[in-house]
Length: 257
Image 1 (cartoon, rainbow, N blue to C red):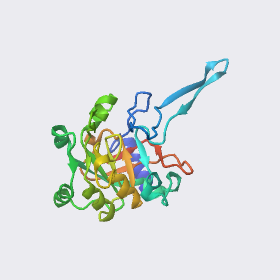
Image 2 (cartoon, rainbow, N blue to C red):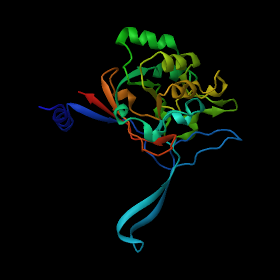
Image 3 (cartoon, helix red, strand yellow):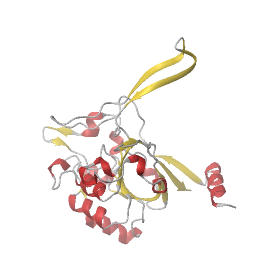
Image 4 (cartoon, helix red, strand yellow):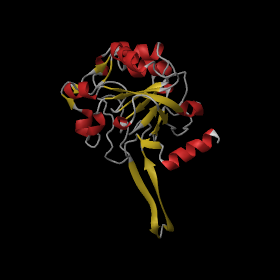
């Protein structure tokens, strides 16, 4: 039997589960909020064109209004100044959009401390237990933050000092960008960086180091608790927007059961 036929039969027969890692996209989907004078993206919005009426009696359709970085989305290298000469979202090789994935679960630590940061030692300890990070694959960082995704205030978790959400230290972000074999990282938070990353050196190190190294980001993921620690395959095809810095994306994981 061919490999592709085996894959299709595995999905249809249930031996391969397709897990949706995508947050629903609605007008209530949480979005990043930058302070003045910086520009902000718009909330997602549908604008009805027709719905079985005199504007179009036999069909229903909408215009969509959204930003590239709204909801579950893909960050391309050109999104950040360090990657400004890199790929836009349409230039990412299709073969890189299907890749193995591992899950590093630090949800207990993030529940105890919303400013928890993943460190190099956390990753190397994980590797000693589970094996090396996957070549050309995704590091999916589970913090349990998806449980807050239906409430913008709880999701952004901001106070007078700014947002407080878990992330990755500057040292670890640089290590993942320069020394690890992964193609990118995936997180459950609004962006790949911690809420307090504006105060790091450099600011927003995941964006700065990973995108500058030609790697990618996936954000606002859900259902990472349904994935094995190793062995899943992630499918994450963004829209091929010419010149785009990113795109909403439906992220799926294939898991053998």
